[in-house]
Every structure is written in structure tokens, then in C-alpha cells.
Figure 1 (spheres, rainbow, N blue to C red):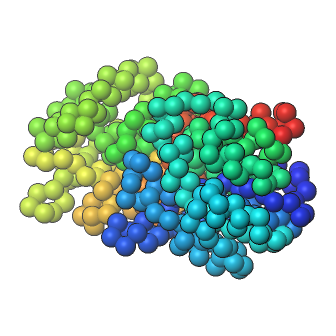
Figure 2: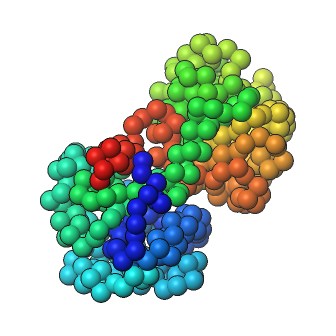
Figure 3: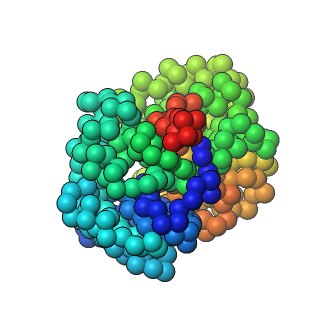
Length: 412
């Protein structure tokens, strides 16, 4: 990819695609965490300091989380505060108001345009229904209206790198393009985990979204990127079920009702094909009369589900983290929001804080969990991405990276 400092931005209009999609309070729709916004500041500052006039594209929410599909006015306020200069906001993506706002920009000024997910061509359901090639997106509403107004396109949105949408992959076909600082940092951190990790390399995989865990698990086992995989959350329970350990009717129903039982056979295969590589819980915590009760795996099943790993598992995993050279985390070990079941998550993130290993944490729930128990500055790298990170670590080609590499090759 072409680096940011490879182009001259003085007196140029620059279109910047960032990912500042932030967790929102479900009642007030106010921003709860500004991590992604903060990570966009170095690139925006560089461009403004070098005389660019910035049009900023971003999204918030989607058809799959419609309640978060809100205007970006608050985001503009946060950007203004962090940059120390005004970022104007126009609640229009690429219509007459947006295009006029861009035309009125002077060097050193910036405007955040409206939520791109207001446009049908930018939502995930459209991408699935109408698979377009980047060159075919030149006639999309967004591109045909905005491209003529700008001299350079910059992308700094790794968290959306898995999206084949016009704002992500089409402008590279039409104008000189460069990758922002964050895009380079994210790719470098994940490549360090996959291609040259300090050994031993440990992957801690938890949370509820176990399709992500299993996708990454196969890749890092096949390539040898992982020396040890610590399984917890629902992934840990699936691993126990793959060993024919009875987890009880309630937990089994929880698994089958969500069609997660399809992962039992792959889990059985991974345990068989990669002996000694996958650590499974030795005890779990369940709820009895509103209180935490821990049970050895040999003493299962309990009467309910298991919102956390037990103390012995947490201790064992923490020791492995402490001895690691690299640790990657995706998914919290338990339902940490409930104080009765925060033990596993708290102990393991404290272990991440105290280890000398290079630590990478990614995914929204993982970052929120880390921020609850430790300072994010105690980690080696905090990835802004969720889906893009999982796909990258699973060996899946990301549309954004392909588009940026093609643009550099074609001198666009």
C-alpha cells in the first residue's frame, strides 16, 4: 500500500474514509467509547497540518444494528475536541448540501459528511444482494457525486476492510490513493501475530461469537502461528462437548437453540489433529440461587449454563499467558458485566497487563472488557477491528487491502 507521506497534500482536497463507528448508549444514543475516533486522529492531523482540505466519510450502525444508525454530529464534536480545531458537520452524504460544503472548504479545514449507511449502496444487505466489482461502483451515487470534487483519496478504516462498498474500494479506481497511519498499524500488528510472533504464541479465544473463534483457530493451527489456544466462553464449552463431557440440559439447549452444535465435530477434529495445542477449561462457574458456584468439569453437569470459567482454569490460563512471548485475545472469558462472573475475565486481563509478552486485543467486547479491568495503555496493541480482524487472521482476502494494493501498483 502507498504510505500517507508519499503524496503532497498542500492545497488539495482529500477524501478520507475513517471508521469511527462507536458503541452507543441504547437509550440516549450517545457515544460510550471513543477509542476508534481517537485512533483516527494521527492521520487527520497529518493531512490538515500539510495543507489539505478534508472531506471525511464514516459510518455508524447498519441494517443489522439499526438502532445505532444515527447522524454523526456527536462524532464531529469529538473529532473537533481531539484535533483542537473545528470539524464541521453536514447531515448529507453526497447530495447538494454535502457537495457545496466540500466546494467551500479552505486548506486546513475539515467537514464530516453524513452517515454513509444512509445510502442503500453502503449497507451490508446491499453488498450481499448486489456484488459489484470496484470498477463497477464508479456510477454509484456516492462515487459519481464526490469523486469529481477531490484530488486524493485516503483510507484509514481497517475495521471496515472486509466491506466491499463504494466508500471503501471504489475511489481508488479514480484518483491517487494512500493508506492512513492506522491502516498500516493494524495490518502490521496482526501480521506480527501471524507471521513472526515471539514464542510461545498464545491465542485466547472466548466470547459468544464462536464462528469467529473457529475460523481463526483452524488457520493458526494449520500455519503453526499458535503454540497454544486457550478456549473459554462458549468455545470452551463446545470443546468439552467434543470430548463427550455432559454439560447438562440447560447448557445443551443453549447451544442447540443457537445452532452452535455444528461446531462440535470440528472441535473434535481439532483436538484430535493438534494434540496438546488446545487448552480446555477444567472447571466452570454456574449460578445457584443468584450466587456463583464453581464445579470441576468431572462434576458436571450443573443445572444451568456456565457464564464463566472457574478459578483453577483462570489460574492455569494466567500462568500460560505469563510465560508467553505473544498473546492474542478475541472474546472475553465470561459474562464480565455481572460481578458474580467477572473473575475469569478480570484475572486474565490482569495477566495480560503483567506479562512481558507482546499483547494484541481485538473485537469490541474484548476491548470493552480490557478497559473495565486494566488500562488499554498496558497492552501492546488494541485493534479497532472486529469482523475485518477475524477475516484477516483467518486468511481471508480483505477487499480494502486488495483495492489499496491495486491502486499503488497502478499508481492511483
